[in-house]
Image 1 (tube, rainbow, N blue to C red):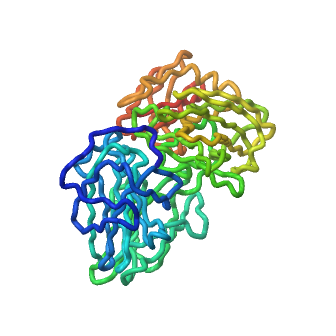
Image 2: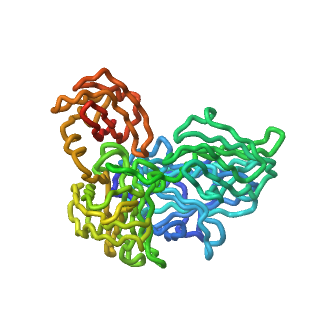
Image 3: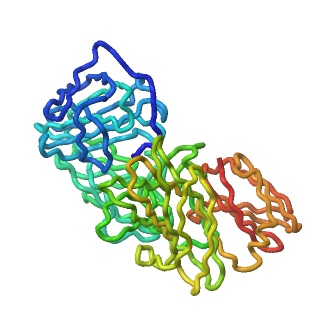
Length: 506
């Protein structure tokens, strides 16, 4: 993932540093269990075959597998300062020959808040030579250490996980995988459950097929699974996972809000689209972590970089989940957007916002806004449009950033859609919820002496996570200590009507 900071740290030095290959052809041979001390990468030939990024230089190593097994390339060593302000690496693994390299694996960050690289459990084939390239895209003045490990194995995990027919519905999903090319698989163990479940507490399926169909699922929901190969006689592969999947997302009612607090857009019902033949930059969910200027709310935001010359200008749409809107009533779209510039870079964010009745480029026919943004901190934007007919509508954020020789990007976060349908919104404005953001409790009061009898708490997927009944009172308190961090909607029922308010749980 492209970094958003130019980081500096303490260079590692040592008279015993190993020689480092200046090119693929001059790659240094590595041995299992060895630790290699790298001086700052200030020279060497860089080859890119794993993504669209570039780097000035690369250092090369190689390993020929003596048998089938797995390798680990690990810079997350204690000697390397971690986090987002320590060592910042990127590593590629190739097969083939130096003239025709084929990408096998790539890692930039071992975790969202750890810029050290890690490739683990990478399957290798007997007799094949693998080339390891470390590059200096992010740092050319900091050295680091890394460790190489080879482990021979006889039972290998499946790969190629994907949705298979029939297509996902709101209550069912079919998942498939590719049998391992090595070993003698007799079957598979597949364990699944809600996202984040603890392995061993999920539902376990044993099968000899290379697919499963899961039913009785919940709409608008994300799940995880783990899988391993059974090679018989007690010989199992490692577990692969967690791997996330989701059911289809229903059309959402308004008010609607998302801060992109999932691993990808599909897990909040969004998607992206571009004209045929487009090969430039794409939108992505950026996991910045808590308390960072790269998010306006929560820990994630939507991000799109400006392309390099080879990419061309941006022409890519981020398309919302379907929204159920009424005819001839104003719709208000509120969101936060900012322009990002790395040190020494210049440029502006350009984009347009449209709406339409299909979730694709062709459907975006209702202009809402078009702007050039120079703010380098999040700025709130509010625009309106009025549907002429009732039905399902989608929003489209169209990035048109021009080519940039530096590092320039657009961040989008905390998108809210509401529609004035009558007196409900006026009534809701009479309710106060505090503290917000909340930690353990939220107080609800109002200025109309409405007597509150029920508060239903729903997440952004529309799922009810709490349902509290009260003896009628104009001031009540609900416990939020058992809620996970995130954004929730409070659906308040009183003797004078209903109201919806949004809260953030820290």
